[in-house]
Each structure stands twice: as C-alpha cells, then as structure tokens.
Image (tube, rainbow, N blue to C red):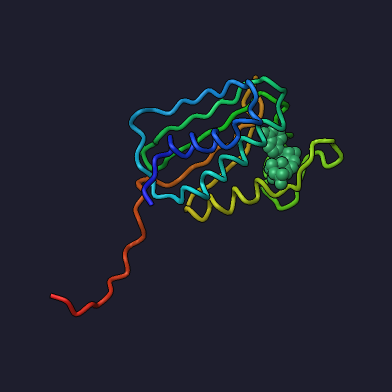
Length: 161
Ligand code: ATP
Ligand code: MG
C-alpha cells in the first residue's frame, strides 16, 4: 500500500512508548515527504527493532535522532543514538543471524532483530547499513529506491465490455 513514513514512525514510537521512558526522540521529517509503496506492518517492525536497539545500546536518557530525507533517486531514513556505537570491523556483521557484538553482556537478546530488518528492507528493494556518527553513537541508514511504484497489476481477462 501507499504509506506515509511519518505515520509509520509515529506508530513505532507509540509501541515503544513504555521503554522510551523520558528519552528525547528528535524526529526530523520534512513536510514534503513522498508516499511510499511499502508494507506498513513490516516497515513498522523494522523501526521498532532499530529504536529498540538504540534504547538498549545507549545510556538511559540519551537522545535518539530519527531523520528522513528524499533524495533524487531514493528515500533515506536514518536512526542515530548516543551510545558506544559499533566497532568498525563489526558494522557489516551485525546483520547476520544470531550475531551479537557482546554476547557475554547482561543485555539480553537473540541477535535476530537486525537480520529481520535487512530481510524486510531488501524485500522492498532497498538497503540498510550500519555505521557510526562522529561524536555520537551508532547510525543505521535505510535507503529505499524512489520513485516507488506499486507492482504492475496482473490484467485478468474478464470478458466484460
Ligand atoms: P534481538 O534479537 O533481541 O534484537 P540483539 O539486539 O542482540 O537481539 P540485533 O538487534 O540483531 O540483536 O543486533 C545485533 C548486535 O548489534 C547487537 O547484539 C549489538 O551488539 C549490536 N547493535 C545493534 N544495534 C546497536 C546500536 N544501536 N548500538 C550499538 N550496538 C548495536
Ligand atoms: Mg535488537
């Protein structure tokens, strides 16, 4: 379906309301964002997983930044936290199933959240990358091809007309 990213971000934040406590979530979503041809339920899950990680891997009370922008050929959504970030040699591995940077830490988890994000984003023809922002923490960037178009309808011969 055609969906507004603002609404998907909003419902993901709603779902995480309790675990956010009093964290500032700073969203920068320009007014003129295009409608996107995406599965709202799955894309909401991607955001929930990324925001959950931002909460889990950064100090209590530190901000989370969510920014959207539309580029010439793609749409970009960025989630940034103010935690320790991800070691350079691990930024590509975090999307692997069951991969955890600190498996012995008391932070619980299975290591599937990001693997699922990757599957969902790639099913939409997009890509997701992990990195670090200087002076900040981890940064996850989702890029979806633009313009988005629904798949061509299958023309059924109805014999009408
Ligand atoms: P779960 O399956 O419950 O999501 P998880 O959070 O450990 O478990 P992923 O979400 O797939 O698994 O993340 C994989 C690993 O990447 C994490 O264990 C953590 O080490 C690292 N990671 C993910 N997000 C961040 C982040 N925002 N900052 C620092 N490290 C992160
Ligand atoms: Mg996770």
